[in-house]
Length: 625
Image (tube, one colour):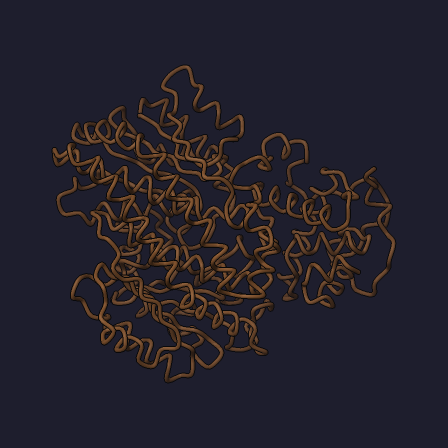
């Protein structure tokens, strides 16, 4: 039987309570009061319970992923990569939809319609990326494909809280595109749960557009099902369920790769039909599958090279002077900086720069946030003279967010507190150049010069290169000069939109960044335990991770789900206030598990932080005491 918060005091530990809870009397009531404006548990539970979503379930083959990764980096990468192979079966299942839908979409474009792709978070970034790729095809109808992200273009760099959970934001996004009956709207969401998509789907369908929803979970919330059950102009479900992610809930992994492959292939087939070569679509879809298989073989053959990048990132973050677990820039140590060519910047920004809320690392800072701790990971665009040009290269058009260009610096030439000029490049840091080489193209001078400067200043350096042709060893040796880690993804089959090259780069960057985060104790087994509890989806995920870890190690959870909800919300509030005061605090999941291990409540925040610090954030040690 679950006990109430007031009964949880068993083992007092010395420490100082967080100011937010100093006045909270011990055992005064059944539940500690939620912060003002926070929705009650009943409302939260009624609309957000993703425990049955395929993308949130635990993958059986990676249940001990963190343990494997901490014993053997290459072995851990191999375990991660084995789940990536599921995208082949997912793409195969989608091929009939490509054949069915591409002729009609092409016909609608030729009649003056557009394809508008929308999503939040990673799904929105894929939408923008695919639209950007379409614009590169000289023969493609200009403006026929539009990609948008919840929260507008600045959300490409930093998560915009509240938009994913808002149906009104989805409706507003549709209104901005002046949808007509000629248009096709494609919604993307791995879990199929985003309220943003629900609002957008109903709004677009009401205007007569043909609306499709690409998602990856057989189980979706009732609000999503209502889109498919509309009496007038129902939304077309495009379900491709390939099972759990390698790291539970991390949909920027297999789900995002599958979306890039499936929707990218659908747009390519649409282009083939526009060129009146529909007879070639079947050949294209089969060749694309073979291309995916070759990409996977290429990446798999480079796991040792990828492990080298992981080792260096771990060493940077674990350096004695590193600021990895600090809320201040106390030193100039502990940072990874990417410099990418314009055609590689989206993959680099999305797949290599682990940012909040996924792993509770710091997001890229706006100029107005320069007083806050710098992002552990940051990416910049090489070869652009102005920040405006860098942003246009980043999103493939003029930004739709008037504040984006002034808020976030992407150009290496633009000066400011959050500029490349202020990124630490001394010893204890890592600078990585990323590019996609065309045939017969040499490594860009702007990257080699940048990496040479970083090398001279004492930073570790790396290069990640893709190429459609097999690179000669002499060419690789030239690119390896004064480089500590190198990764060459060459002989990648070309395709009209460059989807296969993107997937090769994406897979490698995902493996590097996730490998480093696993080594830094940001994952327990295959659960993300360092996520922020900053929106409904993440609160739900935190609760499931806390419940799962506790019951597996200590038996029945001594809290009801309502009590756990209150604890997560209050601990998140305390963590936020602590960091605003300049004091580091562990993730909410670790805080909650420490609270349970001590028999405390959120009012004992300071005691819990001290205990977790003593255990060096190691969950096994925390729960064994």
